[in-house]
Length: 385
Image: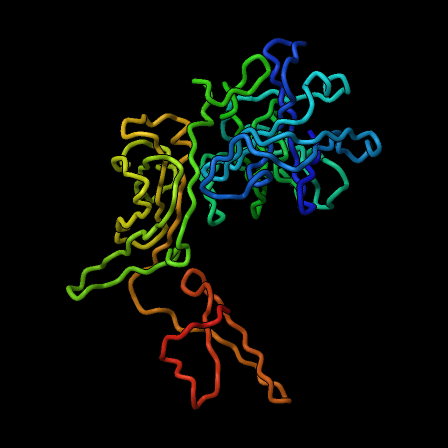
């Protein structure tokens, strides 16, 4: 494992994979796994075979300064930020070359039960001081949202000491040191991590082959949201003239690189990975989903998958790559009144503090001008506050 040096002075951790089919037979390139956001932060895209300007510094420990081999990254083999925050990279070196330098790879481990003892090898709270080992306990984490990203089927642990630059750090099975997951983000208490079991079944004779029947990385698709300004990630239920509560539509505009797509609305993003409930396939030239949401307050999610034909089956890889788009609906009722604090200074200046109250008040828009010419009730372009 080592420190992944990225453009713009970004840093992550990556782990060398043991892809040998038989002990002692290293026949292919060196592959490493890290967090997806270390390779690409684009939501809606399954990245395949793309360049990445980066290098990996091995043996990044406090007592190995001056003995840290550095290897360039050759390409992104596969990377995702939708569903899984995971990336597989190919280095500009062969596995046998790194083994000859004493660099030991990690074997992919199985899924483990809640309460399992694990180890995390990650960056400490003091950046650049080297990797540290933490012992902790692992639990399941159904999903995690950091809008616009939604990650599903994660794990969480109570490992301490992780800090800036810890993304991609390996979480290992205690005892075997098999790789279970990679660090995705820091929680209030502990760490969220993305399991790596999807990579199992993707290698043959030391080479990665993503379209093997046993591999669940593909099929993928490239979706780009358009007309972003018209999409409301936060909206409100309304009451019509008959006193009925009504919900808005998704109003989700996009382009996609597959000929057709399917979608559905759910209240649990895990349901995006279940084939049941998806629409029939729709021509991708119609890149607009106007289906109404359920008339209930809370979080709802739009699931989208790209398909090549009306007959394409719901392969496990396709379902795991489903895009989840979140929208939060507030109960019907008046818009919350602004919460503003104004402090007047002796020189006549005023300091205005805008108080938020999520989810009811998440931002302000304001306009200003001379009292005699400024109509606050008239809608005009306003500067966001």
